[in-house]
Length: 375
Image 1 (tube, one colour):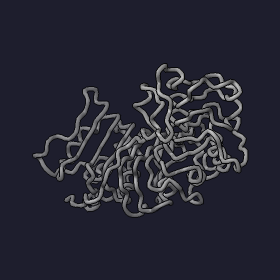
Image 2 (image 1 turned 120 degrees about the vertical axis):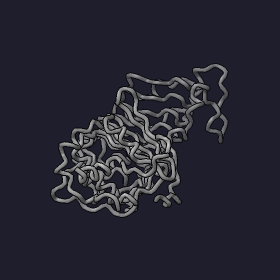
Image 3 (image 1 turned 30 degrees about the horizontal axis):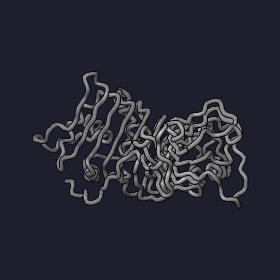
Image 4 (image 1 turned 120 degrees about the horizontal axis):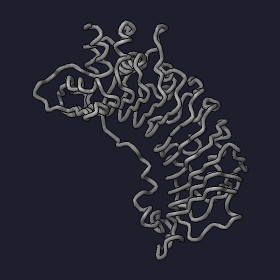
């Protein structure tokens, strides 16, 4: 039984360190959601026992290094003999944030979680140190439906996605990678994501259209339907169209909101033919003063809300569209100031002023340096 407890430590750090630390964990009355914030220099990890019965678990470590746990647990231990105990846990959604995590410890946790019924995993504001070992022959992958990575740095550079992917079963449907330190992947090492339908690369402002081709890894996302590229440095819809064509990606829904888009493409750029699969295009909060050139010929949904349009677009400027969103543009709000050159906020109606081009950032940048004093 002691061995089982050590394995569960990889899922929820439960080592008792101090009995005087205020309780950092809160479990709601329905035993559904449990949130832990271990912000003290010497936290009482045993408080996380409260979360064992929860369905949603969120654990934040205040930037502490988890490296000392390598001396307290065996990350290479085989969890198969405790599979029934692990599967009995109710957790379906797990968030881990604000920590320095040795790759060996992360891998050990993934091995344990592979025997759980976890469906959604979110990693936020983490620094993964060291290299991830290969998947042992006897190990089973983690059967996630959703994986969200926000502001996670990896010591392995561009190969991190391929190394992480080997610990996942191929049924992943939703992947979100925000504020990535390396948004371009080592495509020759990445395997296909056959079941992935939603990919969110938002909040990577340095990505750009060239980087998008590298990030999409040609022909690795055959089932992709929804692609979100908010606040990613995209410049024109035509440039995005070319990047999608180069990567062999044909989404049904494309979100380009919160990018500073130009209405016209580079005259020397070749004309791009959009995939007929695309039926929904979001160009809201893009600073547009006119409808961009080179849009798909036919769309079910076109969102041009919260831009700087000073008149209603003419039919010949628009594609054939069933649902057109224009709310939040100056021409619909009497008295709205005309946009001034060089100002991204001028000409924006009050209803849209709370969400500017930079609001797409969804996570908080956390400095994890100097947190190695954990003992």
